[in-house]
Image (cartoon, rainbow, N blue to C red; front, side):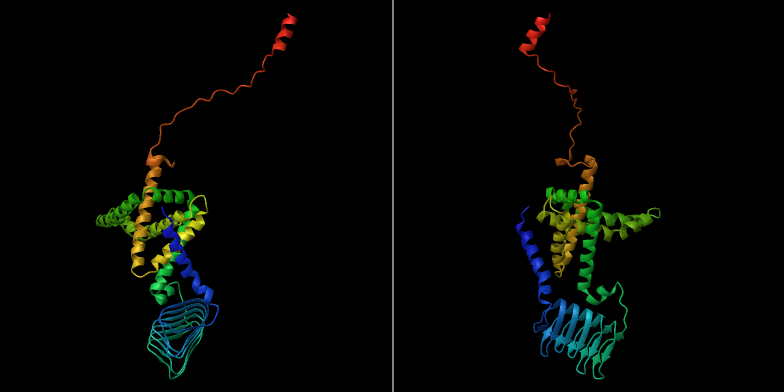
Length: 329
């Protein structure tokens, strides 16, 4: 399998992932119209400038210009003196609204919300807000969904690799040797499993089975995505090198692709189908071979090989010893 595309994708992923972290330690003033995601640092939107979404993990945000999306700070404060078309959220911090502040969405903060009487807010204002596990998806929107899917895939892949390291290597080997068969079986499973679950709902006896099968679909598809991430990583970081690093490489590449709008949904579907098919094919071959890997899935008949009994070597009789023996006679 050619490695150049995977290495290129991994390089792009590493740049996209770590480039913001390298520049986030300094105060940033943004004037472009793109989104801004900062791990740690202060962000200033100057008057007359426009940006998209503003998300800061640790730091502070000052908005004097226009933000066409949301302003979200995980740990830090937000000072709004301009216009925000979305929500203003300080998960663990405070929010200050100046006299020229205009927020079309909601304003939420774990700490206090200080608002000038002239500030205008289109939604609700909540201070001391309690954020639950659903908060990232509700606040971040598509980004929150991507974070949830990416994190869940990494955790699930790590659990699979921890519980069945040999099975993970088998799945990667099957994917490398039979990619088309894995994809075909995955498509069949993607169609047949929901169909069987729906048919089971018609029968009163099989109703619990049908419900359980349909409820397990999301988990099965997530397992398929996790296996695909490991397969991608193993294509780059091959045996006998660390399987954990292979999983991390494959996950980083797959997570970067899933972050692309529209393309991410198609990629998730393809990863779920391929991973599910590869897992099914690997389990089927393992059952046929009794857990032993054989090319083509055939096992030669067992043969009993008799090993001769090991004997101690006898000392050689030299010519001199024979003369002494004859003399004695």
